[in-house]
Length: 208
Image (cartoon, rainbow, N blue to C red):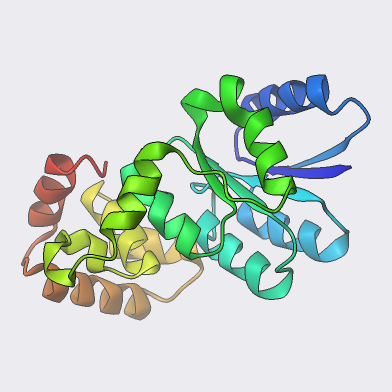
């Protein structure tokens, strides 16, 4: 079996590899440190399962996930993230993830999650299942940030964390004009005027 792990922290990759090798002793496990290398490596070889973080340098993990599902739809992708489920789980599953697991639970649940997605099933916790059910409710019940696109949501979090438009543009390899457009859309959709408003909102809703 061939497993690909994507995370920008070497110590995390090592820990995940050790957990997986205890269960899958003959597995070939490869590691990459960012979304660009993840995409290149998926394109270059055949993989049975991908385990990826969402927050990595350069392109976002969500963007890499969407690319993998569009170009290699048969590869199950398990998202392993430090972000709470309420922030990213639904977005990841809608983008094609086979499961979403918080890093805090990796020691206890990673092997179980891998077995689940390899069998063709989804790995989701009870709280994610409840959240998924609630997404069928009317849009009026959604919080403002839940109406943003994935890229708008990423930009919102970075702006709220104090990143400048030019810094975000550099991170995503996009133009300053493009990020400014995203910022304008975010402000309009959320009915806000300043980055300080975004920061206050993000703190209140535990987005940063």
